[in-house]
Length: 175
Image (cartoon, rainbow, N blue to C red; front, side, top):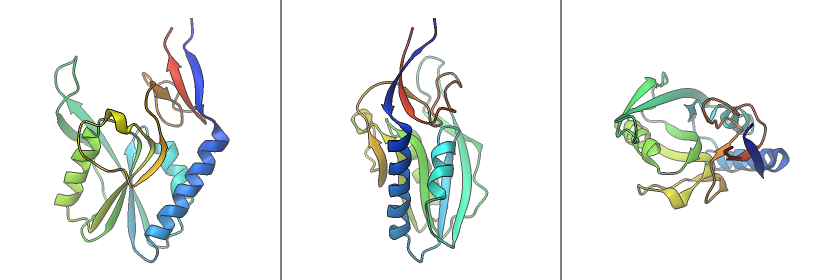
């Protein structure tokens, strides 16, 4: 029996909010060079749509992918890059773009790395902010949609590498 998908954020609402976020980010970084960093794999669709709405002649794009290691049954506390950034962020404004921020551990790790690499400022943008699940103290500067519960897929977010291609956000209701 296939999984059941319940629409949480429809495509029109999603794309309208992404355009609004792009406008907010444009105003925030008016006249400032900006490096937008996409956290792979989940944020790639959101990132592609978002950067098309950011009006900044000095915009640079980069990508990072992380892996956590620990026991097989719990979230690993040791995080490494499986794909590191290539752009030097020293002295630059950085926008970290995530698909979802929940516990905050991966964002916390990336913020520390970016600080050590000398970023002038760092802000976080996410499609979905699950603040209620936060285990670390961090702020999301540009949040698309706050959600409290549910396992969500679509718009880059997956379950076992499935559903990333969907153009809306759904709650996955297991069989």
